[in-house]
Amino acid sequence: MRVDKRKVALVGCGMVGMSYAYCLLNQTVCDELVLIDVNEKRAMGEAMDLNHGLAFAASNMEIYAGTYGDCRDADLVVICAGVAQKPGETRLDLLKRNAAVFRSIIEPVTRSGFSGIFLVATNPVDVMTRITCELSGFNSGRVLGSGTALDTARLRYLLGEYLHVDPRNVHAYVIGEHGDSEFVPWSQAMVATRPILELCREGAGVSGDVETEGISQDKLRKIEEQVRGAAYQIIDAKQATYYGIGMAMTRITKAVLGDENSVLTVSAMLKGGYGQRDVFAGVPCVINGSGVRRILELPLTEEERERFAASCRTLQESFEGVL
Ligand code: NAD
Image (cartoon, rainbow, N blue to C red; front, top):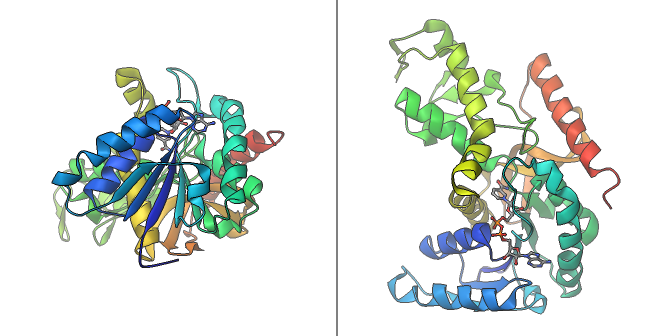
């Protein structure tokens, strides 16, 4: 990866894509941003709009509407193109419609000579990331999806709010499909230095260095349900979700462009870890300039392992027959 000019090519300038782009600009994450969309006029308008904010930005950024040829020297191609989830529609229902969209994108991107990293947000994201990997022929480490990064952020926010602890000090993950079969392996959840299940056993009060305020197994179950239902709730209220995912994608982008070795729950191809093979699912991974450097295998309980396997089966079944 070049360190002189950090370049991102964004395909799909809808609500998610532009929330991401706006966040990139505000956090000064790259030096060059090319916007690509089947609706060329929209990409042009979005580039103009962002450029008009440059006078107020922390640093300069080259932003323009482009074509797939512009992906050639990009560090990252980020795909947010597709059709948004309709009220009541499951993420897996979107699959067939979005697979066709991806065929029209991946082929010209790879033909441009692009040799960076693919990052996918389009739903159902685990399957779309796998489709990107298959269609591009890229090494799987260079293809990642937003996976359960947003779900994990939602979990940390809810736990942090309940326990009055900064979400950044909550170390808990949502793993598996970004969708209905995702779950929280509570055996691995920590609040600062304390396992959350230990806090549950101790009940309310001050436990070690954490004020627990009575977290219970029932509350954990409710929080997990809230996380799983969050997208449906937001879509019901405002038709789409985009700010949270835009920020999650920005965080992943920073980890890649900054060669950070940060641990994020992205959708990555499993190659034997968690007893799974060839399926893309949300798991904690070390992310750096080479993409997914390493998948971290959590020591799950037997029950959690079964839930993870069930989630992977759902993903495998949705992928079969698509390409
Ligand atoms: P949107 O309809 O606002 O934007 C989609 C954009 O894709 C449009 O600008 C459209 O013109 C473009 N597009 C469609 N076909 C294209 C093609 N063939 N080539 C290039 N561009 C094309 O939708 P949105 O709200 O931005 O959502 C985008 C995707 O992100 C959806 O699949 C949605 O479900 C997903 N999403 C994912 C997460 C996550 O956590 N991974 C969260 C929210 C939304």
